[in-house]
Image (cartoon, rainbow, N blue to C red; front, side, top):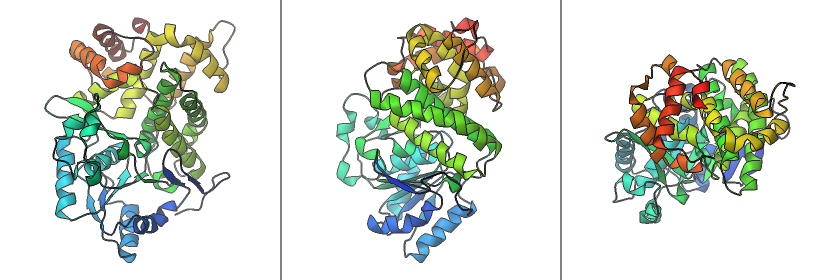
Length: 401
């Protein structure tokens, strides 16, 4: 792998929100981490597309040379479902594994964490949905340890205490939660994201931006989360265009991995209407989560304007977004959002990715019921979510007001 061009520090170890090793080629320390955690036979969870990549083979070879057996489970969909998790649990138990290495994008990380949760449970995975005190039903002693290694900069699942899993029967994305689902160790290695295609670099990077923006705008007092969210947005504004244009730029890749991690840390404060809509859309239409967030974002912003305008005014200062004499700060921010999306080839409407408006009532109801809706700055009705969806299908920002 190429050597780092990252600005100081090239390597860093962080202990917030969990143990994080940051730097180029830090993945080479995986075998030592496994030994320290007494993992002699971990199950590597990744997605089918990554399973045959050379760096996966190199990791497996390195582990073998360190006398660590490692099988690969890669039956993970882009939107992982309960079948993927149950198959992973079967593979884990059949192989007598003693830990999980989750490596890949958000789908692989979410699946890996959910498998590690479920390997020792007698309940259904849906009994652990993030509702009320369901998490207390978990047998903590039987949970497996997780080492998380993201290869995309978007979901930040490596520092999350939950997994988003599709309920195939109900066509719903459900959040499975337990505090100890937070991976014990995370490796942020920019070299592993160098080969991510430009369109996925954009979609995942904008996902991280939406995480940070929704956390920043969510109601409630949490200045620590807001500070992290602001810095993440600054990093994304600066470095996502560079990573998009030149995927081999390790400095940009490193800053984007960090921003993704920060966005997921910040959204403990809450998310909002963008995610409330993206979750059902992903469950029904099986589209990329980050792409859905990027398309839906401006329509939700327009609807939320009365509640967020003051915060957006402040954000423009942090992001160095200047308004013209004929603009308000909110209008300048919206103009920047639209141009930022356009620079990455993000469609302006959902119909451009094959989504029609015929399911508006159902999607509005699903968005209203989604846990992310609780963090929206304005309380929105199922009808209002349906109207936002229709405006996003048509590409009509004025309708979203």
